[in-house]
Amino acid sequence: MKPIEATNFIEQIINDDIESGKISAVQTRFPPEPNGYLHIGHIKSMLVNFGTAKKYDGKCNLFFDDTNPSKEKTEFVDAIRKDIEWVGYHWAKEVYASDFFPVIYEYAEKLIMDGKAFVCDLSPEEISATRGTLTEAGKESPYRNRSVEENLQLFREMKEGKYPDGSKCLRAKIDMASPNMNMRDPVIYRILRCTHHRTGDAWCIYPMYDYAHPICDYLQGVTHSLCTLEFEDHRPLYDWVGIQLGFAPKPRQIEFARLAVTNTVMSKRYLKKLVEEGHMHGWDDPRMPTVTGLRNRGVPPEALLDFCTKIGIVKANSECQLAYLEACIRDNLNENAERAMAVLDPLKVTITNYTGEELLESAIHPLKPELGTRKVAFSSEVYIDRADFALVPPPKYQRLKPDGYVRLKGAYIIHCDEVITDENGNVTELKCSYVPESRSSNDTSGIKVKGTIQWVDGKTGVDVEIRKYAPLLKDAEYAGQDFTERMNLDSEKIFFGKAEPYLAESEENKAFQLMRIGYYKKCTENGKLVLSEIVSLKDNFNK
Image (tube, rainbow, N blue to C red):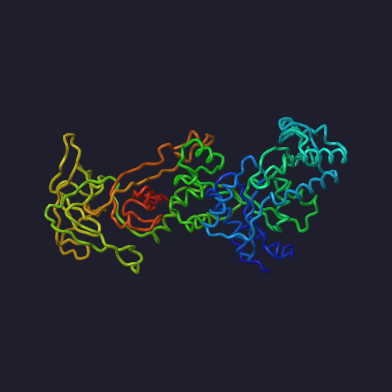
């Protein structure tokens, strides 16, 4: 195996390991805990783990860290598999920490026999109280110097279920004066009577993640354990476990910055809370930053990988603008989404001098003429968006107004002759005339108009529910405040409009650019056409 041209610090480290002869192949793992649904931050982790292995023609396992059965479910396992496949990655092997429970236990006994671990009777609260501070050493447990024989007997009795939950634990014997708090005799096994989603009730003791992590990596043959930056302080413990247990070759842990996006909830714990308290329709709510939510929203996986690639793999934590993510999605959809027309708030327009009906030709995609055209019906009755008419227009207004002209996209120029209002002065209908010589494909009218608006034929147009979304968090400047104080409870708005029948007849979950509105996904719910927003047309990111 040869080094590649490094594009980030991880690849440079791997290249150094190849050149020094430390490794002959690259093996990574993508290690989600099945305690919730994956979110957009995990897509960056997929890119790092699966992508790095692919570059080196290596392997990447799907590794489920299932050492905390109280929070883990088979439902989450199934969802994680589906999410990874949707993003486009494939794992070499599917592995679980629970596959290694017997070996992890045997390694714990080895640490005890080597005098490197002891059974402690202190409660979790007492252990926390004796850990010390960043400037003061911790206090050794009174049980730290138990004999190997006593520790071994107590640990085996813990495994047999002799003691209640929380009454004892197994701790590594390292250094209570270490400047790294994680090295101050950390707990590596605890008593927990909880049914595991795979092993059932076979175990009543479970290993802690920091202890199981290096063992599982070694047993899988992982060469580089790629983790997010919060595990940097845990690396000395990762290395200590591997050294004490004689792992050769020992896996190497490398940390990279996790993904943070403005206006976005990036906590599985809080996302779970949003679902359980009914603020969201479910884990797949289009407003959720979960992978299943992004998929349901209609975001292309290629756009998400493009976004994660462009922000890069770096060592320092930072926060990325939501507008940048939206720009990547918009770029992808602009190139790939077909065009169609809909109006959010329909205003009836009667074209008084038009008789009959006709089918107009409109490009399916203006950038891809090879896709051909679609038929758009036109008659004497159309609907425009109420926002495209002003009874009292502001200066330089370019849409429809009394005694004004506007072009209907792909059709004709119309002139507003009469405005009909109700008893409250609300506009209910417009009476207009069209210019026969102004057809878009052959305009000989000589009339110059600055405004072009979308429309829907009144006779063939279909009813549609249109859903628009705003970010879950109000803004990015609420430092130190809880998500609860930042929640945008008005993040979903629903409109009942009109759409051209082409949308209703198209395949499910297809993305469209609704001209002058945004990018939307088409779906059908209970026989009703629904268009849900993927991303707006407006680009707020300064490239």
